[in-house]
Length: 150
Image (tube, rainbow, N blue to C red; front, top):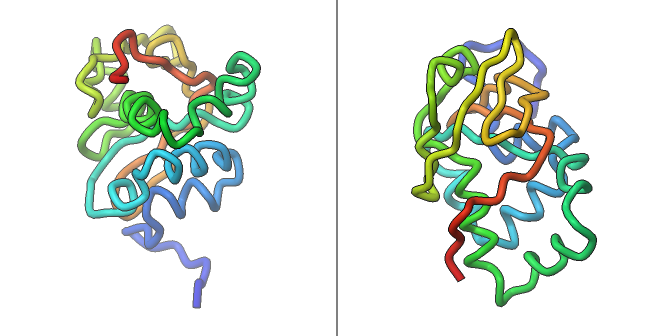
């Protein structure tokens, strides 16, 4: 039974929180194709800069289909891990950083201009979606790390 009560600790994990939001359907499919459901559904905590469905639509034609092929699973995971940092971080926390240390291993530059916060050029459009195992921030583009494993 899922009551919509206000609780201090969110019940849904990162993936369920993303699914409930409705703007992260493509991100959820990518997590599934990359074999990362157990990780992002696990204990964490993680902070995920999740590209919205509109962000995925900005990728060049065919790019997503290419990444979703089984033989590109490792590359897709590398790209998704570039959107994840360890720990539960609010936008207030992230705004104090110069770089985010991503799970991918490559730092992603953080910029705060007025009240606009971005990570590697992707604007945070949905902030501070709390979940039981971390935090989600929706971003308006898919960030591609400079170095991806093949």
